[in-house]
Image 1 (cartoon, rainbow, N blue to C red):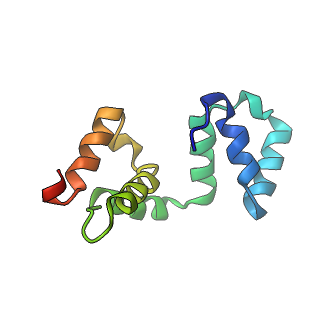
Image 2 (spheres, rainbow, N blue to C red):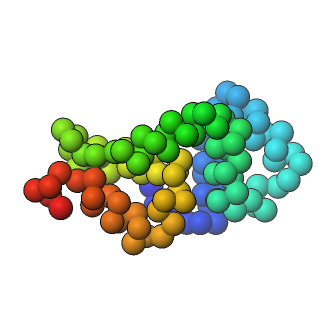
Image 3 (cartoon, helix red, strand yellow):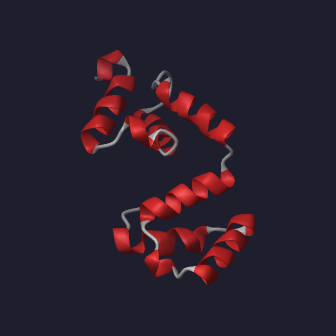
Length: 109
């Protein structure tokens, strides 16, 4: 979904459930949601709910991701899902586009 930067934290927090929802309620009671940037929120979620071992596995999965038999849409979704674990490899839009393109099947590049 296309959500403006200012609304991302509130929108994402609204979708949390169970342990993540309890965590967010506790965090929000100490610091209002409006003071959170999307980058900080995302980083805190990752650190809280993904172990460093899990993050490393997902980072490696991102680095070796290729389209293979996936549709372009499925490949793009997987690319974006995994890219959150390897954001330092795609610091800008141009890097993201290049890495996404490089993982496509040869005939689609």
